[in-house]
Image (cartoon, helix red, strand yellow):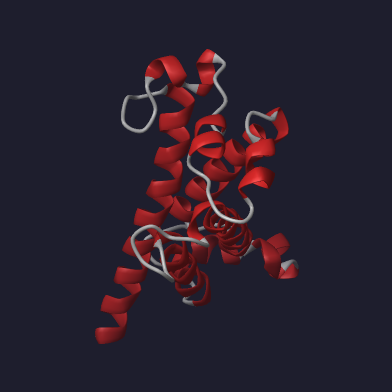
Amino acid sequence: MEQNKMKYVLGLLRLVIGWIFFWAFIDKLFGLGFSTLSSNSWLMGISPTTGFLQHAVHGPFDIFYQTLAGLPLVDWLFMLGLLFIGVSFILGIFMRLAGFASVVMLALMYGAVGLLPTTNPFIDEHIVYILVVFVLVLGNSGEFIGLGRWWGNISLVQKYKLLK
């Protein structure tokens, strides 16, 4: 009984984390006025990475990150990463690949701002999210309130476990 409750909590946590990534994609794409104004949306031709990479980064790698600002390849990788991670987590499929991609993205963001956090000398939300992603992937959370169990029975996924 308690184990079933934990499965549902893992499934809900996966949905919430997936929504965070998916929402970031939607808001930056359309500029819905939450983090991104419509005049600054990607559909209006504005780089979704420039503002952050030019103004929010600080620390020992700031020059490196600032040189990436506005590069089309960086914008596409960022946006497709948000979309892939968000949809995968929401559906509970490709959890291993999406987990890896999210850890890389979060680690890069931590490197941009987190090495010298402003509100805590050691930990920021990027580290917390990375740990949550590990729990979600290792806990097979895609199988709970998602399509992960069905997805895991597909012969290609059984053959190539990385796709699980």
